[in-house]
Image 1 (cartoon, rainbow, N blue to C red):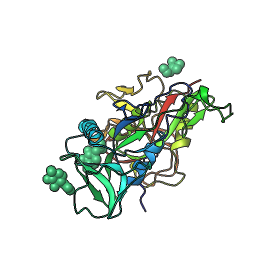
Image 2 (cartoon, rainbow, N blue to C red; image 1 turned 180 degrees about the vertical axis):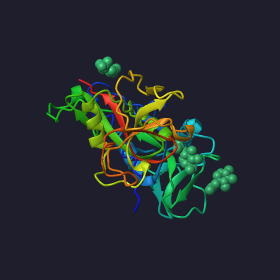
Image 3 (cartoon, rainbow, N blue to C red; image 1 turned 135 degrees about the vertical axis):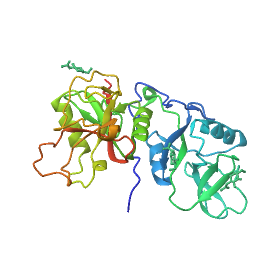
Image 4 (cartoon, rainbow, N blue to C red; image 1 turned 90 degrees about the vertical axis):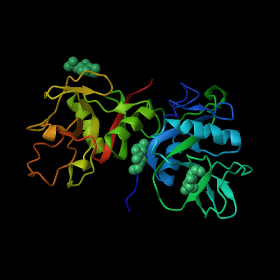
Length: 308
Ligand SMILES: *[C@@H]1O[C@H](CO)[C@@H](O)[C@H](O)[C@H]1NC(C)=O
Ligand SMILES: *[C@@H]1O[C@H](CO)[C@@H](O)[C@H](O)[C@H]1NC(C)=O
Ligand SMILES: *[C@@H]1O[C@H](CO)[C@@H](O)[C@H](O)[C@H]1NC(C)=O
């Protein structure tokens, strides 16, 4: 089955440095130190659940009218076309169970709702249920971080990267793949994790990013090889920038690229795998192609500087 991956991971485990992880746009929750935030990505209930877990939180639970209003207020950042968001509860036909174990004393569930996972209707603020795997934005409630200075000493394996990120010792950078995204979703997804779609500045880095993004099989279409962080700024072959603002001082274009086919290739991808539409000479392998931003990429690579 197709898995809608939003395996976007934690920015929360290196909290030795920053105690309250509240992504941009987040606001304090009812419990001191907690953070309520809305995620502008479409996810299934399951992938949304995982996303919040990576922030040491859960899909939001709602315990009062006031909290309901707060969450509804936060959804104003979503496109107007958004009708629902996932909440962190399920309804079994009789009662609501919140994933985070909150008691279900408050409910805004529309009467007669069938059993299913909870959605908030953004028009009314009332809740409804869905038992199909639709994709909607969602709200997370992350728990207060514990102050590491109060913890008994322990020796967790030290990584200068957040959990779920891959560290390159040589490049002193952290990388993470996210899946099933068009450019705008990938850009936003990386930014939410304090990162950008990856820029590339050397052969080593190019190899690293391609190794990370490759599937290891011959790919049938362009959408299957990684999206990285280059953006066309104009019609010339040299009109490119990196989204992270670093200098576009290294390139690895495949033969004939960037072609700007149809005047519509504003994004940058790298051939991490052999492509079925091509000959198998592999001359293009680990080299770059300009591509449409609107195609749904199998994978995109985010990057952030390692923290020491
Ligand atoms: C989520 O999907 C809907 C319907 O496909 C789309 O209109 C909307 O723009 C998407 N939202 C985001 C944040 O990608
Ligand atoms: C959402 O709320 C609006 C306004 O109350 C209502 O018209 C609509 O039917 C609701 N949708 C669902 C699926 O409950
Ligand atoms: C290219 O830019 C990167 C990132 O700003 C920088 O670290 C690197 O030294 C530059 N390389 C050259 C050859 O100028």
